[in-house]
Image (cartoon, rainbow, N blue to C red):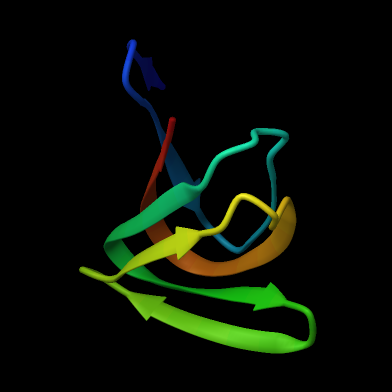
Length: 76
């Protein structure tokens, strides 16, 4: 985890399943740097692979991740 005045970063080492939650009032960016994963949110499945980037709006506070990936999580 790296924090500075402008942003925070965290590495998620996803092995199978992970419940992602946040309590921040800003957006979050997830960047897949290795492998692939799915986001399960509101009965929808969103698939991502190495090189994909997804913007999570501030109003989304939780969802499920599943897969085998290294994900860089960036927030302000």
